[in-house]
Length: 291
Image (tube, rainbow, N blue to C red):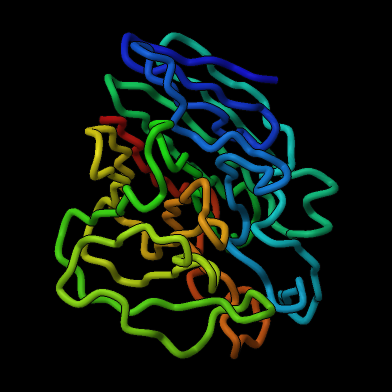
């Protein structure tokens, strides 16, 4: 089921399947900023990653010597969420644990996703509540894809990504099994701009740890159109698109990361894992601003 949220500036659509953001359009001209999920390229638009980010080695993990199997990015993106609140300003979706989820992920949780429009900005909120009698461990992350080009007359090479601060940072890449390589590679040296090139994603996702910036923007050399993703507090940032002239770029703030090559498959000590005490709530949010 698709729900619509709009104001004088933006119109967004959200699918109850996965509580997935499905469209971001400017009201003035109807221009679509969100990748529209061409199944021959990448069939998703902005999936929510929960309770893992990325891939587990051999698609399995262990809790107290019990083995569980879970596919890439977890199960939330493929589950039907319930609409809990819908008005002119807010869309709120909830997903609660069930018998099927407990087979893959043995924790009782309530996941709430909120979409709120304010002017030219969309606030996406995540809340995880512990409904269990023990600590709950989880990861959560965003995966929105944005069209390149935004304007039809432009090309990929006209675009670039820009941090709000100068960065000196290494990048991590995924190996053939989609585990994170232990060896990092120099990426930015007192720089803030990442040019978009045809081969930028030929080695897969770019994974960054400990960036100083709180936002990353997609900009064009030929027009004033811009998408800014603000992610203050998220410890990991992924940048991903298709190899060889990608028609989109994903800017992905994460509370979690794929298994590293040296993983022991123990979920509670997995890199990036979040721990939530009994009856407590975890909250995070990020913003997508259209300029």
